[in-house]
Amino acid sequence: MKYKMMGDGDPVRLFVGGLHGNEWRDTSDIVEKLEPPAVGSLAIMPVICKEKYISTLDERYYRTLGKPIIQAVDELRPSIYIEFHSYSKQNQKQLTGADRIQKTGVPAYSLLDNDVLLGSVSPVIRKDCFPAEALCLSFEIQKENPLSKEYGSRIAEKMKECISRDHFIEQLKKRYPAQANKVIEDYRNFYGL
Image (tube, rainbow, N blue to C red; front, side):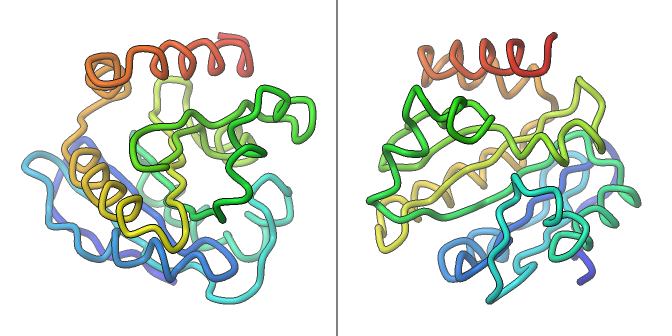
């Protein structure tokens, strides 16, 4: 799958939805509705896979289903990379629980408004494909929750105007100071920075 490019120049952003399973139902239109950013460029990939599910935490994902993402990252070299996933309501505690790092090997997501979750993308792609200063985020939209989806769309609109990792952190601290501190601490602890 090829990406659709909008705008021109730096910063280069890549937004991806519909990564596996039926997530495309909740995330693809969030990505498809985006207009070009005011500054820089935005590449979108609304649907990667509509059926099969392999976790992005599994190294096989980016060698199989997610291979088009790796190809786009290699070609574009984005400084901002965002994945839009979706989750079932009953899984929220698993995704946000303090014990997630022990269970899955990755830090827990932070809860934002309207059951949208914020976390890092899989270390499989983060460590291998991006420099430390890149902004790589995963937003989880709660399935069958129109408010979550609408809020996810608003986040996508704001994120397409984000110009750097530091710009994002500055904005996040204004709206979600506790979550911002958690994201920064998790990132430093997990990646040893």
